Length: 354
Image (cartoon, rainbow, N blue to C red):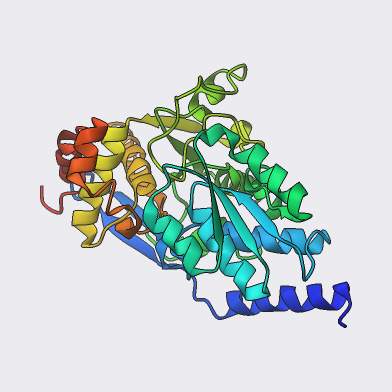
């Protein structure tokens, strides 16, 4: 029988081999004719094997747990997730031959649940999204397994100094552009891991780039950034934009690294998502709509101030996962999200003609 150390060594090798087979994600250039001298770039994270930005996080969480001696050949892995992280973690769990259980809010989009199951994961639904943490911890204790805990470990599992993280990739790909050092990098916050990595990287590498977090209106992060005493929202108040926005301040969210927060209404996220999808010729997810709305606000401010430069944001995942929700006009009508006006406003921002 192989020793635990031998098994862990092989597990790390498999994960690293998978990374070595993968090409970097594309950086899509989006000219903005209405704002001369300002260019938008989209870091397309939907091209990962599991279809989202969370593929990077899942890989880091697995390596972090393995190198901390928390995972063995018989460990049951548990995660609290709104969907995308669990999809990616199920992928890596199957790679290592491990059982994986995702604790998800009952409102999670069905295509995400299907993707988790496709990769061999199991689903444990909860009605109150605030209970996902406690339920995941309880299941880990009951199974003798390990709670991966993305909301605590996201900011510490990724090497923010480099090692092929998303920040290093962005700056490498921007090197030959007209404005290689972005004026702004825009991202959302679900765990806070991506914003922490970006914020630390730009400081470590002495870049002048500023970090903006685009946050759904029904999220605690922007309120906490403004007032550190606000750490949670009332029962029933939670983000409608899957993957970003939380009802409590997650341990991985480091507010001090964020230079600016832009609060985005749900109709703006959906309108932005729909307009950007038409511009690109393919559907993007709701969190990308949130990001693009913040980019538009920053671009307008730069233009009014007579500044030129680049803005980089993340195309977080494909819109295919939201066919029954964000791309379903009936669902949006029932949810009371009047998005058409916001879509028209975003189309004007993205228009290829003056």
